[in-house]
Image (cartoon, rainbow, N blue to C red; front, side, top):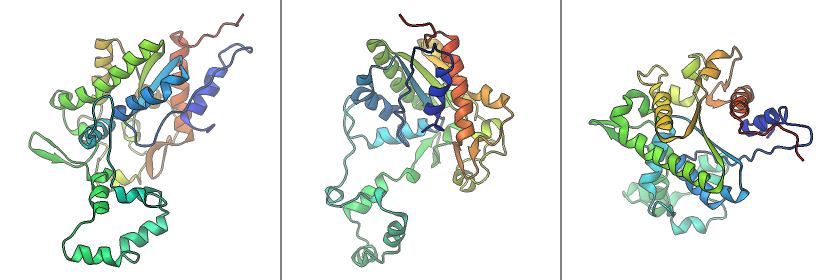
Length: 290
């Protein structure tokens, strides 16, 4: 926890407040969540903590994540719903909670001879259908006649060509900002760069690079930052772009060798930049309390 971005941010802010005051940073992040899900999570859970400041962090591939989740949602804007097959509720653990060794056995059909027979006959079980539906790797969207299967597709087109997708994600972020306003919480959207944005040598063995989901040299890889900053200026949303902070530091590596996500050093660099932003703009009260 101490080496996570929220952990480093809490430590950074504690250095700039008086000794008789305390600061707490709640880590409300959920793996693979995107703005559509984060807005719902804020409504259901986070707002009840009455945060003084709400920070949403975002990578450019979350625009694709949002699109995929929107397609899967069978509920409404206010009440998202993602149906799972009833057979999953009968398992002691869900498929995604199974140990890797068991997953390998499942895929080899050693534990599922009847499933193998069903496959041979061209039949699908409810489980297989639903697992396919919620497979992150089976993303697909058509842009100007081109079928894209990578969540990094936004780097291959100019922002104006992707307006519906940017609009959908921004609608979620803007709604989250409005909800923060309603409860008196300052809202800041933080844009996170990937390794290839500031150093082509970062995360050389990332699976997305190896599988060809991205090259790191796409023509519009920086358009995301400009587009989101412009929308923030237009709609009065505070947007902090962390790309300059990562470009300026000489510390390396900031990502894992086989993963685009930040390592402990990357988390610290991001946290320090966010902390300085909050303090410089007076979001954090450094005065002594009464």
